[in-house]
Length: 419
Image (tube, rainbow, N blue to C red; front, side):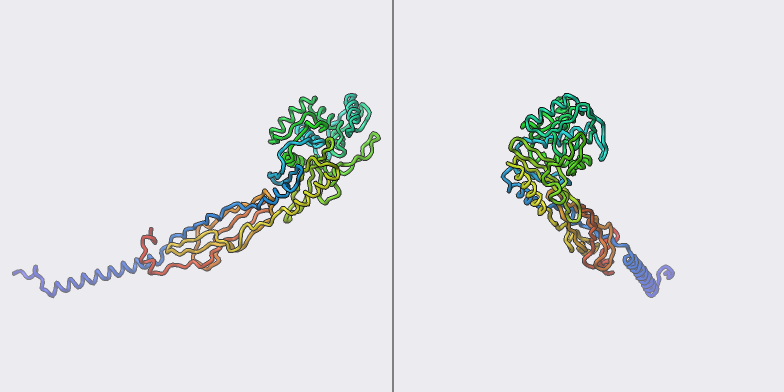
């Protein structure tokens, strides 16, 4: 028997023991290495889930604005210069009277602009102009005689048109700008289509015919266009002006200008026994300036016209609303950690604004890309609030601590830990 190839039982036991020991050490070293790796591995970032209502639009209820005009029996409309909405109780078109002149100036200024305070081009009063003055005076229209050959500036024309609402100067202004009534009406139609003012129809530039008509709602839109033109706004706000040629002082026909605080125009109109008014008023809305616009048509007297304009401006004063846009402590999302923790993301402050009917505030959620373990109140992003009142950033924070998972979770979740 060859004993060198047939080890004794003792030697075999020693070898097995050594192998087992080496395997145990290797396993121990591997386990220690895995534990160390798991303990120090970077956790997957928490998943951010934004609440579906975090991004939204907030607007005041417009019902009160509609109720304010519905309470009137005669044609009435209201709106604000800063907005596009109009509230009206009557869609019919009514005779305009001298409100036509405001439209005429808007159309003419598109073709022949005038800078605020400037005199503009010079016009020479013609025999035809003088004849029209006599014609308007004969039918009890507003007109002012000046000698043929008199030189007037564009600014002189506009003073006559806007303050006493002179028919002869409005007619001359339109023909000076366009050459004929037909050319003026063609320019008006193009202007009307450009601004979407479908209810307005004109046959001449002064309003001396009942065929010059518009709805109350479209006149709110006309007033907005006028208020956007600084030169027109300048004339609307003039209470008086001194004119040469023996005429003297001319006065603005707006009954509320200089009577109600903040009133800045915009135009009166009379046709037969129907009295119309577009009136604009600067007001404070939650610390910012806004402009009320009220249109009242077909009033039975000058007194009723003034009363209706004043009453509508007073009613509009109550229509801006303080709106809560974001509540403090509002949940806007959730952070979900790798080990399943769910931590609410909440606002640390609130936001509100005073808004006009038709205005709105937009809320946009800008949440953090990553969050780390830490105490409650950690920054998690912002809600960006945008409204006509301005912009605000509302901080979003965690409402509970984000805690690192224990070692046992790390050891038993290698798929989550290492991907």
